[in-house]
Image (cartoon, rainbow, N blue to C red):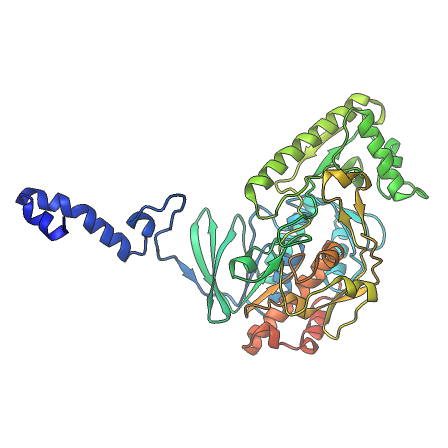
Length: 473
């Protein structure tokens, strides 16, 4: 029966109730809400809504890990108005929220030098020189906050990027989610320093992850801060503290003790690092085959890793001797992720770059860390990690690898830059991430100043600004 015939056949008092669902559906359709307008099992379409929009910023950095916090400070020091968004409750990312505890491939000019010098002034670094240094995570948190405040960076914690929108080819607006709800933010330049390439993916950029597009990828690991009664009797188990002892030997000795305690660690080269006095840091576990953007699997990996840590520490404590009284100070809020999205840029750093020691005129950093691929599954866990037969020469990472290919106004810094699986296994460490962040921040600031896009900023203009603003204190 047609609607018109149906309505004519109804008593007057029943016409309004009969019209109600039709009106509601029409309103829903008009509001662009097909989930309310029609049944669509397994899907829900959010109603369109207006969001508060803030447009008082030149550069927006998403992610405040080593790359992101450096990018924000560098951009602000170069004259840009900067906002820095971080999903967790402190700045520093893997340094602080993941309790990484040590600095790798850090012998670089610029902000790397400044950071180490400031940490030394706080008695917060353990070790000589610039490489393989252990640091105090709480001091790192405070130092990064102070540096952001001094540079004029507007920091917002507990805030995650949730969406990205373009105007033509240019990224123009992002949406964040926090306790304040959904908020929209405009800027001229955006920097993806999320580690996992969240912003680039939301903006529609091409990306890769792991060996293929969706793994196999490097395992996750959870670090832990430990306190012992006396670290001296543990010297032969502690990374870099026993003169003349092979580093792998300290790991094997530590693994033997864990096994003597009745636990076979999921990471077969567990490591103890000295932080300060009787405060140590350990990495003892692997969680295999977990996609960096699969929240359910990362949650399960986190639960597994924390349980394994407690089992190991309880077992060691029961051994007595130098392990007597060992206790957990803290486990991190974020499990350590090695392998996230790699956003496609205007240059892709590849295995061949490492083998031949590539040189580029727009080199933002010369990476020297070896290829470091942790076992991709339990079947190959015995070796702990491998270089996959690739002997890396010192090689340059060009600015082009930090600039998104598929969209204008978007840069990347840290492990989500443009590279292949092998290259990423070398450049992903934090000393390189800091240098990338410094270059991205200055390039973004100059793009704003010149009213252009990052890909139009020549390296010849970026380099002297980095050298000026990145001098050690």
